[in-house]
Length: 94
Image (cartoon, rainbow, N blue to C red; front, side, top):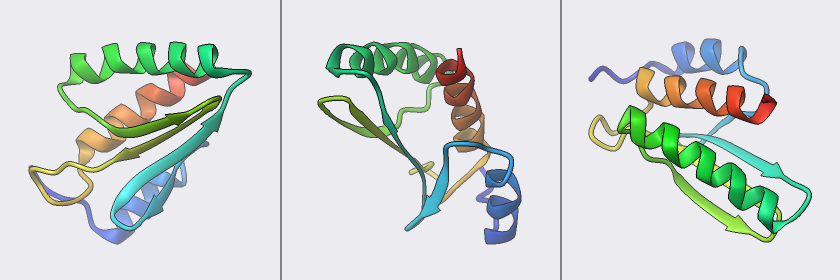
């Protein structure tokens, strides 16, 4: 799978509401009402990640969910990362 150039990444990330490009990853950090809401969102995202066979690096502390996307097989950002980032935004926006 082809990795995207810095220019391609910046063009695509400009179309997303919740994501930044940091240290080779697409990154978002989201706050929810409480732990249960954050965990529920993780569960919804987990089903989509499994369906796409693309699994994020993430962490959850109380009401915060931080997600990092990178295609490890390609050692960079690919279309797979943007496909999942876009779907995560759809899920968040409900």
